[in-house]
Length: 560
Image (tube, rainbow, N blue to C red):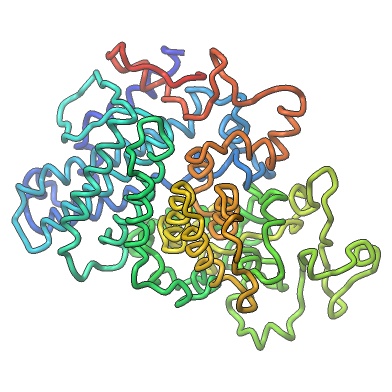
């Protein structure tokens, strides 16, 4: 194994130890990077390149979503170890890709931190330091949630380094919080931050989330949940969540809205090729309808990730997030949903229709009937659960048999084999901030305050005023918060972290993920059990990184 992975391991080490190659790739003048980064313009471009590293972190959704209660495996192949755990090993390519991208991005941040005091000083210099320090801390937060303790590399490396120690998770979290607090102090005095840059409100959101996450750990500080609630409440202070509807929040072209605190930014002019955009919006969810992206009005879909039955059952007739999240009505040309006014669509032929149970009443009679709509509509029937599964969830061998997730639809996407989109990917928005506060209050035993925060999210989603508002604070438990996060954040890069944070990963995956339950648990196999009987909750440190590291004290995670 060691010999087989030596070239890949060398690549990982090179990423960690030498920044020159990838930092100079955009240097059109052949000037030395040291000279360029000391100029005001050069440093500004360096900081922009730090933001660009986010694109590499979010090219694949597996480590964020697969193998949870919300997503079942679809038609196309995906990493089996990530989706099912049983075969998850330190040689998993998706884990290596994530680990490598994170440290490559951290090294870019280290370079920006290094040159901050060396560059020509401007009014924005301290603000840029706050931005890059926050982003570096954010990457360490992703690593700490995924791997536990990791190497804290905080200096710009200019020569090969062959030995890295492994800091404890406690040390990594302390570093994250310290860096974010410093960033917040610097940004609190900043004004006029352009959309897409880190702001004080962004940092407060993540300080709340980091404290919330650390609060579940054995090394938690006594005030972690209190600080999580305080930071979250401070981040949402003065904002009315209902100022933008759920549908408009995700409508193509409206990504720059007041609810979004931070996002992975895409712009056609910043891409070397149109096919280098993001792929989540067009690839991972929903049916493949044929055609080449917007060229023929149909998105490229691969059925790679599908909603579980659990997800479909979360909604009711008064929750507008059902239609706001899923394309349950397909017109003859898919993108006519966006390109035509509602008044025009009222008289258009519907190609496929996916009703929920509340829309059809007597489901047995409805299925037995020869149901059509305007004489041309093919209706995909709502199938009540049989063996705990809906027809929608697994009919992946027949195109159009699953409602598409439309939150990320991009009518301007470019067909490039897998589809390419320049829709931004939301990383933090204020609806989640409310739910972070709610979870912190639950952990503090203050369910009344938790219910207030949850109700703000539900009010925005309700079709009829008052129809979704909770009145019994005892309903608001960690499991209820996870349900609400599922309704609000489906398709966003959160679920694995949510379940891992709350200690619910194994329990809820067994309960709601049919693939894992039927293939393993019901056969008496615990797919999470690994070497030595330890649960595979943390991700494995990539074997290639361990092989090349000359520090013999750098150990693998339990279970691998």
